[in-house]
Length: 161
Figure 1 (cartoon, rainbow, N blue to C red):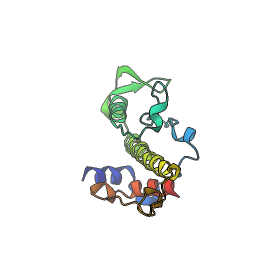
Figure 2 (tube, rainbow, N blue to C red):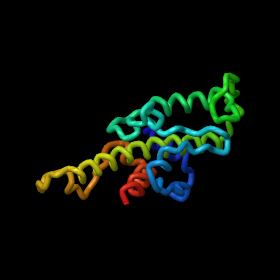
Figure 3 (cartoon, helix red, strand yellow):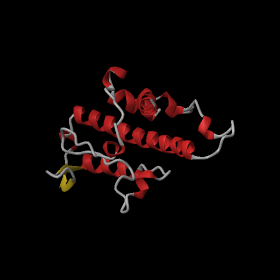
């Protein structure tokens, strides 16, 4: 239910507002895209100390949630990080709120899609030849409430093409 509401808020004109193209390469995927308002969400696990977690079969959404909360509660510094100066909620425009909803979904869905691609690539690299082996996958099923998010399906399709 909340996902549908967030999608409708972020994309009031539906798919006409998506304007999505998957990152061309891994470096582009790990970039933080700075918005008009000076903030940007770092992709989950992109900044691990050794860099090895960026390719781990792990999911992490807590950093993104914390960043969204900070960007709403505190002013953004010139370096794109939140300052200690409290932000009045009335100073956050509807356009910025929509952009935050859009960017949060983009970063989350790209994180999910990247893990699917990593898994599929690991299957290609395996030396198994069984008909039942994951390397022979032709279909990805996304089920449950999250599957109703058309933007998620757009991101997944773009990554898998």
